Image (cartoon, rainbow, N blue to C red; front, top):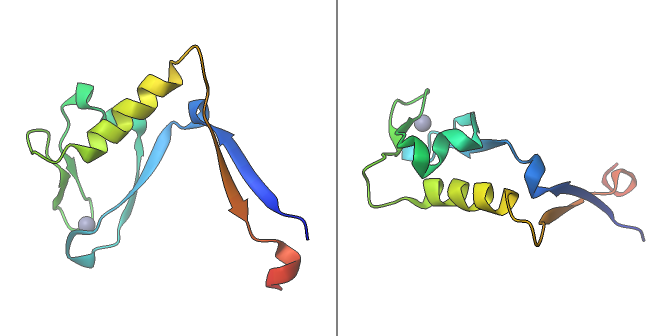
Length: 94
Ligand SMILES: [Zn+2]
């Protein structure tokens, strides 16, 4: 059985899809990676429920730290990162 894998380099990652989990909202928003980095000091608000996902002054900086880490790794000279995501074989899902 062969396995299909979708691969992409971290440098290709420009946009993230953020899923709002406030009160099980579930809205998905596409945001340019640099817009959620700590450099932007941005508050991210869900366009569907209007609740904050990240406030630039809050203690939870996981979203901005995630963006910062990716942006730093994209500049790395000594290594690269490639994500490998297994995809279901279409023959086995029919
Ligand atoms: Zn929401």
